[in-house]
Length: 177
Image (cartoon, rainbow, N blue to C red; front, side, top):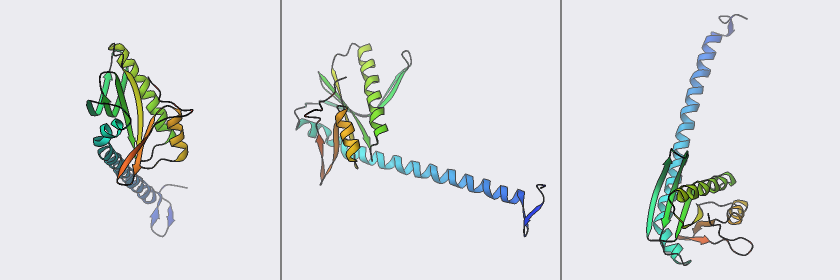
């Protein structure tokens, strides 16, 4: 069949192809906008949770003196690159918090990798503090929450007008990197 052969009443292959390509571009743009909306939800979670993290961790016995948001690490010499949503620190401990709207197992695995990178950077700087991790999310599935706790992360989730932090206890314990 030649490309100029009529497909239907007034339709040619070229016209159908052009319409498909136009739809493809519209789908790409829609996907981009949906992705941006998802990022905005993530930012909302971060802005709702981070300001009160120090207070909530204080209730668990932590005294964090400094909070950094959106910390970026770029160590080109050792090929270590990562970002941390919230970085709480004091003289002997650091808490690296990852925020997600709805954390997935893969997000928790990525945070484990992030914690390993943070430990490497700390060792390069002769920083002997204990590094701990937390996952904050608006919607936690039971399996994701259990997985986070099992891997030694504190779990930060909404509770009424505020949020609670669940500490890994019992057979689970806070992992120190």
